[in-house]
Length: 402
Image (cartoon, rainbow, N blue to C red):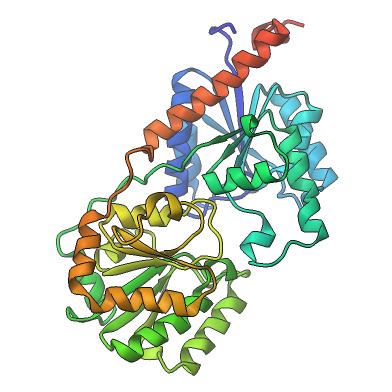
């Protein structure tokens, strides 16, 4: 490839920004590409709500493109819109995430040479803890996306293994762990201030989880498990941190509130809503739990370990890789109230065990930093470009001259 000709890279985000932290994460991901003078585009479904966010992207050289959110995985109007976009930009590399079939089909039709699918979640039957039906086994959108991708980047070993189980060749799937987050510096006394703000005394034992009010996070399993804990250990408090007022969250949140009331633990359970910064919560926490039915990875688990917390988590996503049973946490079965309550109670009642697991809690060295993650992605893109153009004996420059 001729280094004097810019590679055109399109990141098909397809959604919208919910926080400035997402903007910062995307800028960090683009940084090595911009350093290499690639022409970088980011596809959103709508302009950022905050003009400052769009300005941040523009200032570093990321060009925004707006395309309507697909109404389904096989929205042909959206597919043709994506195709026209990729052709107009002269795209060399396209990368997409959970919105995948539309951009991958569009990129294939536009003859985009490198088509990367970042698969960040498990398939729906696994997430819903049910026996796969015929359509679940068929998975037309997943199989088509896998076939049209020139490379698939799986967020965890579990996601990779699920794809391989569907017949995707193992050598086409690379595991790329999400990076550890950049810690927000803790203000002195932030843990005490967080507890005080939520009416939690020093002697109480805080059990916390972070997510949002949707079934896959299994808060409906955690609440009855906590009720069993607090019946034996009255010092326990439960914090459920994360949004609950979006359209897809309201029904679940209402059900959870009813559950809390019916179990008689309303005075012991706190719904915080969305937190812009989870670190004060983590610093105020004694036991972290992630009872999810499914996680592609589980970024907040890495943050909890980074914060030095003992963790009680289901065997999903990153858990089996980063939690060592009895050393820095306890692994439990999905949807098992009894198993979860036993593990939480064990830690709540054993101060020494909590301190020992907290001492052992850390992020494994193989989890990349934000900068290492971005550099690895860039090398993945470059490797794909080099492989494809060497076979074609051409380059983006020669293509532009035809």
